[in-house]
Image (cartoon, rainbow, N blue to C red; front, side, top):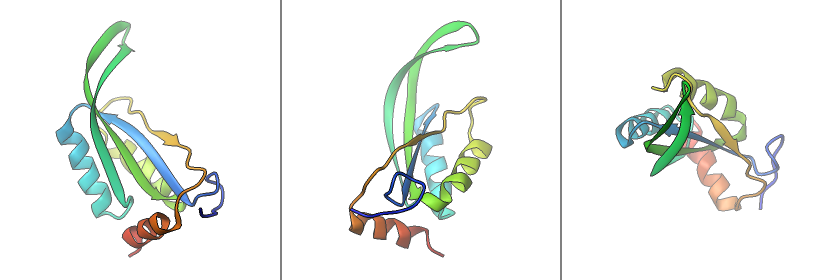
Length: 113
């Protein structure tokens, strides 16, 4: 396992955000990985139940999990927020207290310019 600073010790940041559909999540993933703000984005279809504007809502969404270096978390968060189709996007950081060294090296290689 690897050490880091200010990120729980791993050197990696993972951010999660829900999108209205697979197409918008895939477009965000391509744009963000293409810009080298994330090494990888996993997407998965989910069903959500939530309250919106006083009404109980239920529907399908797509959860995207963005994996990046800890030092890029703020830039990634800003990019997700500025390009997200939702009026109030979820941008939640997932703690990564440790991660295997080869994976950390792979992330670093993917985001370096």
